[in-house]
Amino acid sequence: MREYGVSEQEACIELKKQVESAWKDINHELMFSETSKFQCWFLCEVSILQG
Image (cartoon, rainbow, N blue to C red; front, side, top):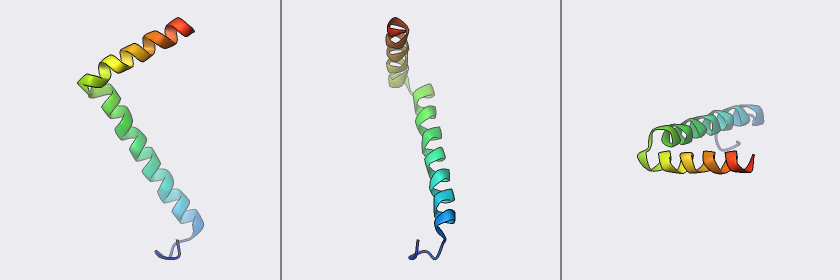
């Protein structure tokens, strides 16, 4: 924080933005990647069976 001259609060806000952006990227990959469609289906089936 000192290196960039920002407060702790500003650093936390920026970190939260970066985390949210990363989650959006992960979710997009899970929804639209061909290889992950099988993984998602498999995980959904497993959770239903355990449910």
